[in-house]
Amino acid sequence: MASTRRTFLAQAAAIAGTLGIGSRWNQAWSHPANWGSKPGPAKEGTAVMTSTWNHGMLANDAGFQALDEGGSALDMIEAGARLVEADAEGLSVGIGGLPDRDGHVTLDACIMDHLGDAGSVCFVQNVAHPISLARNVMDRTPHVMLAGAGAEQYARELGMPVTPLLTEQARLAWERWRETSNYQPVINIENHDTIGLLAMDDQGRLAGGCTTSGVAYKMHGRVGDSPIIGAGLYVDGAIGGATATGLGEAVMRTVGSFLVVELMRQGASAQEACFEAVQRIIRSMPTEDLQVGYLALGRDGQVGGHAIHGGFNYALHQRTSADTPIESALIDASHGEH
Ligand code: SD4
Image 1 (tube, rainbow, N blue to C red):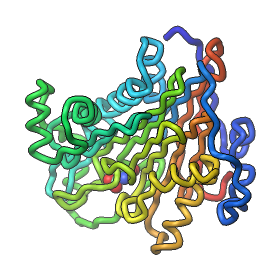
Image 2: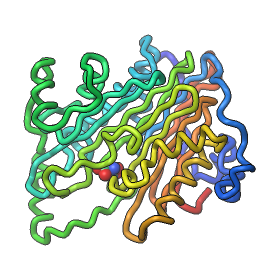
Image 3: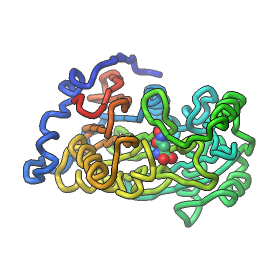
């Protein structure tokens, strides 16, 4: 890659200051009048990419590489997601993802651009790169979403490899789980199933994507928030984008990513909007045993993230002008730590 890169690992408090986030949100969410104006226009040449969890660092690297090779924000998203989907060691997302309770790896993914175009696949098996399948649904079909066998059939028609995705490591983990068969999804930094990605390219075009193997040991046929436009992902080119990770049922019930973007439209910062969307969940259901984290990118390049509980982080790569190197950070967005 042409740019030199400086990598910082930082705690939220330190980094939030340098990124200009996290100062007013804790009062502001309940006082919309205090919110600032909605995101201003992007500055030319200031690309940003942010992705959930530790694997977001490598995804963002791949995204910036795609950008350097002449790609758009959509290409950044697809490249970042594909990298994580291809990682057979990680027990989440794409190859190596943990199966459902019957031992089937079933994947969900979606992608959306600044024009509001969107593509999605859900409950798809044997396709290692559901993000690319979702992009093909967006680019080449009259539909937004394909499910299950139909999505797999479309992958075959496109000439994509169709092959079983259950690795030996994931099969052994499933065998161990079957000794108790206790469905209790624990979602935190060490243990999650998804990557959500948001990017803005140097022309200020926004895009987002989300790809997952879904919560481990779910019922066969269960689909979470990740492929649902408005729940696991939403992008409005004039305002910003948002993505979710965590227990999809809570995100779907509150249409979380759409909510985050609509709050930004009303003037909330990316950080304030994520905070308020988390409060909606806390106010509407018991949350002791469930985790949800939101990540948002405003059209002005500001990034925010917030979660119900500790143990949520995201990676942020940004270039402040066309000539500056990419700065990379891994940000702890745990509840109460901003
Ligand atoms: C789902 N939202 O299927 C996904 C799971 C997830 O980290 O994000 N896990 O509900």
